Image (cartoon, protein in one colour):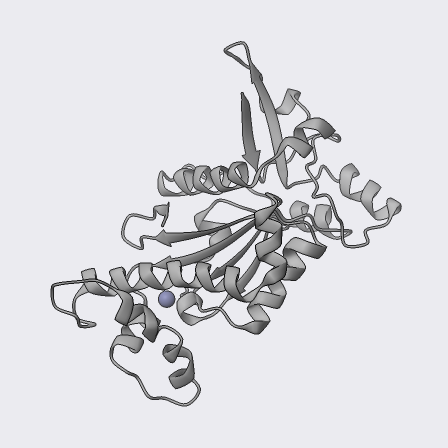
Length: 259
Ligand SMILES: [Zn+2]
């Protein structure tokens, strides 16, 4: 089996890069590797015997064998470490140096602006690991779609994640029909999720269960919108090059779960 780690400093040769880079030249690539490199790395576990990660460089074949599902698992595993208080020690300056010449993120995420939900932190990731778009209520618009298309079709990311969270203020605002400047138009994008949420109890922003149910519906609808509104991403997913998934992050438990 293939055991995967994400965001660990590894020796040269252990790098996982995506199939298409962003124009990184040979010299900067060498600097990138010389600096140790970060990103996705793999350790082979064969015959029931674990091989230490540092001793098992990711081969080209292993890199090519990386699936979107494995990237999902990497994020979930990172979140499990975070939720358990066992996140990896990081040298952000070393990561900055390692990624200065090029980036090879494996995922692109749209998540809420909420200060408690930075995906790198809650999934124990580092610089260069994931593209990020953040908008209140993790709503999708044309610019977000364009950013995702860049991330996947140009830069080679293999996963699109829509991440909502519990107790989302934007969702509460949508339920309450908030009218405030440009926020009015933003919460209108969440409103269809309210209508589509099948919930028999109190349908108000005062009910945390209902708020979270709407947030979940919103994530599902955003995933559907991405597929409907982006032919580029839809076709990449249809041919298995990427996967588009939704997830909910629980502010109380620190756990991330796919929707
Ligand atoms: Zn929020």
